[in-house]
Length: 309
Image (tube, rainbow, N blue to C red):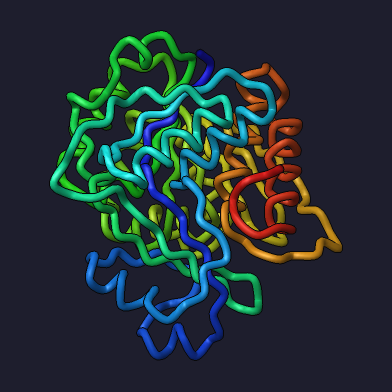
């Protein structure tokens, strides 16, 4: 097994909304807000559902890797309920080995409402359900040890026990990578994330907002200096400015693709990470890995949802 992902097992529910819907419900565009089950139901009650699919940030990346013919697996906590069964089936249909044994839980499978505004930006309201309750006992030790790399998501830190699960996974892994997930997620867990990036992770994925928040940088030059001093692999996406990989004194840039018909930005960062890791685990150069990430991200933003055909 080349890569095993550990993340929130979330069923994505995609809906198109106008700007007024966000304002009316006090939602900040392009961010992820954690909500309770009641608030989730209130939000979705008057919306037309465009699509429902098994998601979660790392799960999206892992599916992208599978579609590029890599051997991958995933650990994510679901209930043994209708959505949980559908979630597992969705991943196995994508040739992802699901390394989690479902059982009956008091809390339902997690769900994420993805609100797409006319400018193609997505705003997420997530009811974590059982997904955020992953514990060290949920970590499949054999699968971790047999994988070449473990890929984690920052969103997992929004509940308590996943911290211990993270430590266990990283300690057992041959190499570890993590996505910082979201600027507000970084803000919530800044001290812990900084410790992980500096001292535990081999690879960190972030967008420009997230890495500036983590490092308290004023300019992108501050980020470059941080990456050089870090002396690990730091991969940063910058929207239309392209992407950058920093490892020691090496700084490699990749331009974004132009003249795309952007439909929905859902999964852009997830698929970028999947494409980059595809290059990385197949011994491509950092430049080529950035190009692989850019290629997948460019494809996904020209369609609804976070799954390529």
